[in-house]
Image (cartoon, rainbow, N blue to C red; front, side, top):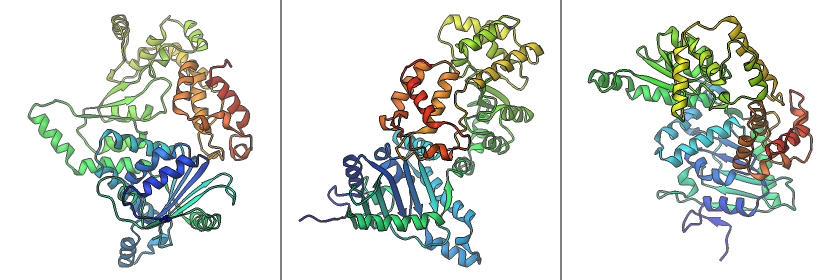
Length: 469
């Protein structure tokens, strides 16, 4: 007997329902979830089905009963306190990540989750006033009307690993899938009413997850462990490598007064990237040795654009592009060591020779001016003045506008079209690429930089498919 109900038994799981809907309805453009509990593990499970879905919205209740009791006890109007709502949500996500078994699949899931937040593919909100106990999943195409297939799934399953029916210890749930237009329309309208009053939680607070995870390490006693190991002679120095922005880097520095070294990405084109110049100087002020990685930006500065090479060749003294990049770093007294990847014995000899002719504050003003000109020239070579603000997203047709512009800009600026072409074809699904633009113009209306996005997408696609500019 056929039925619309399912219970997670005998492979008839919520996860399988999601797989079926997304597989056989490729035009799904929106995935909305209204849940009491949201777990990172649940998102990891369904993420493979969401590659071609440009907009994911999750509205959470966040342990409503517990928080209500806490609010009543403290006399606070909890559900009107947005910051408290956000704090509790972040704690739950943080705990879920910390408790995860860090195999390769989990690590990739975390990285994908963070990337989706940064790219604004996913939005997560919490309602500050409503008691949300419902579990509703809405899967809609674009356009959505009585003639297009859509689904709403409702019942008892939260967006968790167990609620989805995944893994060995899954929950017994009672859910129903509805596909009639009036049902999906009703659920969509209710979701929209709740969503407009909900408060943003992510991606604004994604950095707080990283900060709090670090503080979790502190609570585990990582510093006392390291000091005991040093006392036993197991190693001599204790430090950390960091790819985070300056605000988090500074927190790491300030959390411990016995750091010996830190390692950061830094080169003359990355002064404001990650820890940057501010981080370099701050660590040096604390008398911490600074090790530099990516001094040549992954080899890009070793093989610069012809216009950049022309500028360097006109300078005095004559140096190779590699030597210019390394000398600029060694000129800074705050830097202790520069790590440069070398693929041959000849490159080892060249780097040793460069180091032998270096020194802190050894570059003349004319030489520093040369690097300044190179920096300015590189910046002027960006074909699109995109700031990656994300106002153009989500594109109703799924085009990944900011990601495409970023790849296009970097490929042109660093004269690496072939690498850009490979990345475009490897990391962008066909229906996410620039040629999927239908010229609706919605993005151009929203763009604060007044970029002619439609034309720039055509130019970017042509270049990233291998056509000359």
